[in-house]
Image (cartoon, rainbow, N blue to C red; front, side):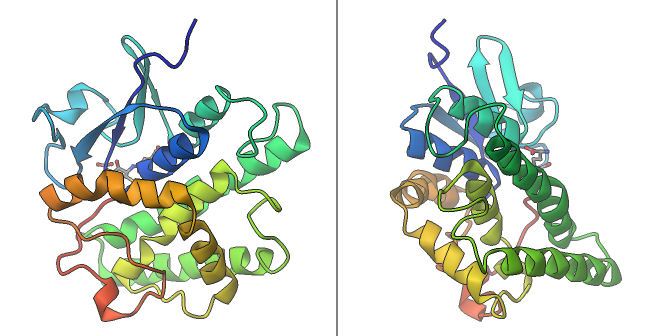
Length: 239
Ligand SMILES: N[C@@H](CCC(=O)N[C@@H](CS)C(=O)NCC(=O)O)C(=O)O
């Protein structure tokens, strides 16, 4: 079976689905991208106006159509599925090796400890006290990653992997919510290193029309968070 026929990715600009797009560009895997406005209720597919929940009952992005009527969800799993189309790429070590488990370990940390700690900061209904707790937790996690990056170029060593794609996209979020990344020089250097990749330039290009249609600002240049110009005028929940 040709697993690459007719891949369609449901994504939203600035959302974690950007990690999947980065991985597609890195691997040279083509896909049609359908952008979803996750700021509207119900979420809608921009090109058709279709209610997104009718496409993906989870109502979140990313989701990848991998065969007619077959939808794969969960960012870490989609990225692994894509890498398995290109075995041997440096984005994901071979199955069964400890190196692969290290990447999965960071994917899991990214999903459960980072992503879902940032999420509540985007929720307008979360009281300020609750947000303060989540901010503190986020700083604990970010401090851990900062220490780890003291001796490692990327999360699992010298190679950029799918775990880095995921963390990188999330690093674009805190500035909107005044989580100050200024004290984390390793993390900032790490961010800038990835931002210089061709795949990120392609991502910015690809999401620009949808961003403008949804009236959202582009990724901040760098996660130096508290600068006023790095924040959108009307922050809205995305994660
Ligand atoms: N567990 C999911 C989480 C995906 C997720 O939280 N996506 C966010 C964007 S980063 C989203 O679609 N939010 C809109 C919503 O849930 O209504 C995954 O790993 O893919």
